[in-house]
Length: 76
Image (cartoon, rainbow, N blue to C red; front, side, top):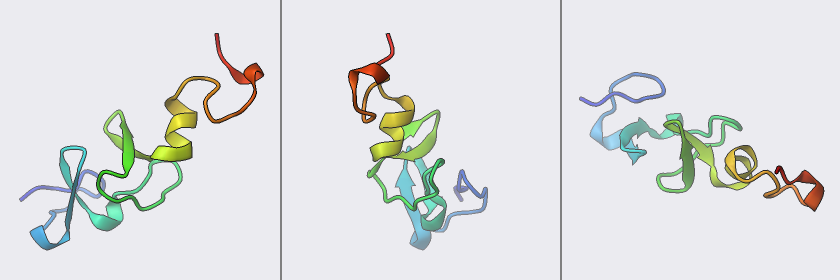
């Protein structure tokens, strides 16, 4: 029986959500930063952890000026 990567409890077929190559409980598949519940395929991944596509993932791991506005925020 597969185990949920978040709570480490067994995931039964009726309650599983497949994402990032693992089986999760639906309430356990949440954004690591804002704790928003995510659906399978509607999020980004960094170091094996799920994040919201926008704006969190882009702001945290994208290019320096992305989503923040203005040329002064670009990192060289």
